[in-house]
Image 1: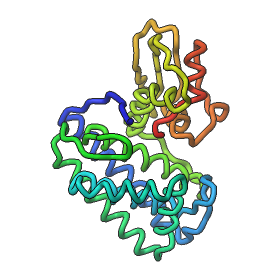
Image 2: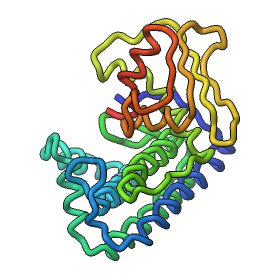
Image 3: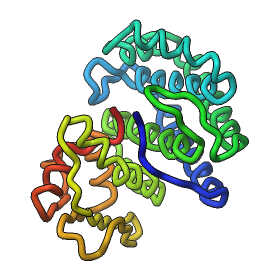
Image 4: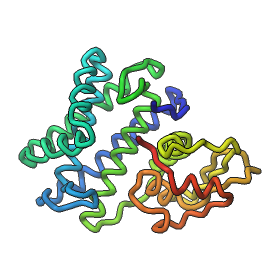
Length: 257
C-alpha cells in the first residue's frame, strides 16, 4: 500500500499544481525540439517515445481513477494480466504511434490531469495501484514521475536537466517514502528518527526530522531526488549519511514500489 503520510492544503495545491504543469512543459520543450524519438534512454529497451508513452498512459489511468473510479478495476485487471511486463507493454504500445499523435495525446492528458486534480476535493479518495489516493498525494506523485522519466530523456540527449525549486516536492516524497523503502526490501524500518538536510538549487536548505537526530542524510536536493527515483546509484551522488540506518536507507531508498 502507498502510504506517505503527506498532507496538503488548498494553498499548497495552488503551488504544487503549477509546478506539475511547469515540469511537463519543460520536458515538452525538450522532446518537441527532438525529431528522433527512437533514441535509446538509460531505461533498458526504452526510447524517448517509450518514456513519453509511459507518462501519457499514466495520465490516462489517473483520469479513469478520478473521473470514473468504478472503471479502474479494468485498469487493474489489465495490469495484473500483463504481470511484470505491464509497463513495458504499455510503453511499447504508445511508442508505436506516430510521434505527433503521441505528443498530442500526452499534451492533452497532462492538461486534463491538472484540471481534474485541481477540481477534486483534497480529501476525496480514489483508487490506485495497491492503494487509495487523494489529490494531496497524486499531485506530487505525477510531478515526481514526470521529473524522473524526464531525467531519462535529458540523459539520452546529453542535456543538462536544470535543478529547480520543484525538486522540493520530489524530495518530500523521498523523505516520506522511507518506510516504503524498508518495506520493499523486506527489512524492518528503524524506530530511530532521521534528519534530512538538503541544499536546494538556490542554496536554500530544506530540512525534515528533528535537528538532533543521530541518523542524518545530507547533500543536494538534486542528488537526493536522483537517488530515490533510482536515476543514479548512491556512488554517483554526493550524498552523505551519518549512522548505520541512514546509510542503509540510502542504499534502499525509493519512492515507488
